[in-house]
Length: 588
Image (cartoon, rainbow, N blue to C red; front, side):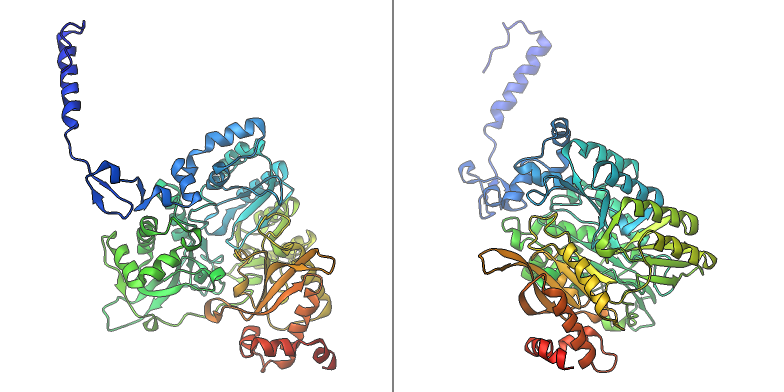
């Protein structure tokens, strides 16, 4: 025992220190408890390993180790330090920057891409102008609208990152958690709140979910990214069945199961169309207020049990594949104060069909006013167009702009007497509201100009394709054409009537050019289908004429007013190739 009596300490200090040391010595005799690599408990320190959600640290994949070393939310000091020297992040900080919506996109571009968070895709004109200012002051003078009703700005330098993040805050926006292994932008039916055909306004729930995520630190750093969507039951699709959680509004009438008639939500799980899978109805019926706690519980089940060793098996889909839906719901229910309500889908009233390209054109609202859906080719807008659109929304609408998952936008709240003036103003800036059946559903990811994973210039090729088709033909039925640059399928090519995935096509001189693998027959919601591959390695410069032949064959061979998806899925891939043979098209 240490002797403090002759150490110069007071009597009170000596008493305290003696007790402290005695406690330390006694603690040496406490039994040890730890876990080994198999999650078994042990009393031997030599057998114990450090764990993260039941996984030994040494087994974590690289991204999980990066997150464990330092939470991505805590790298703002690094962002400031790099801004001071105009330096890009290195090593693990490249991944951590994504927690702040900043993507270092080298080698495609030696700059950052900024991705925002916009709850339900709803923006005030003040916010819309502010995003235009970010693009003009620190970006390339244009923005890209995304397939999650979001905005991306490119060509951002390190020195400007703090100013941009502060500017977003001043606008009432954020980019927190917009990338990496986090819950992405919450999407909602873009016409919700003014669509006469919808069952419920879902914007309050999308916004509540958005803010709940932002304010709960434990909801960051998931095993993999996570998507949530709300469908109001209205006419315009938000592709909720492509999300990890899709909440679909339904009406329940009189029944013998003791459920009070009214509007509820079905919960669908594990949509991931890049892996050829739509979300599946899990048999649960939720009140609107229950959707947020159920999502909160399910996400935490995923956090605790998702695979953190293999990035290719880390999405929610793989946990549910392993467990099954019943166990997934059972584990979710353990985290809730209320029981999950089972109710057969067939006992709900049938949902109204979606209006393909209903996000474009002029449509009457619940209040008698109108909204105008504006076509923005492949989602790209100049800052001058953005300022003009904000002016139009202020002058004729309700100072609001809604973004869609179709890379277009909506201006709501326009009185009938102002429609023509608004249309004239839209056309004056080089945009249009008319539903072009060929280009109204033309979607393209960033492509090789701005993404290191892309094998083709999707946006450039999409613009060329749209121009070619518009010059060559007229189509009486809308089609969706999706161009994605790689197998990550950011443009969701498997749900397009016609889908294309970028690839490199070898040339005779040993080089390679842009090309596409082409799939046909996809759809979402009431036309749900995963497109099938029909052509491989089609050169980009030969692709427009092939797509033209595909559509000509459709017009020639369809049964009455058959949709393209039904036509494509009525034939085998071999039959489709034969129908599109140039000699047959020429003979017709």
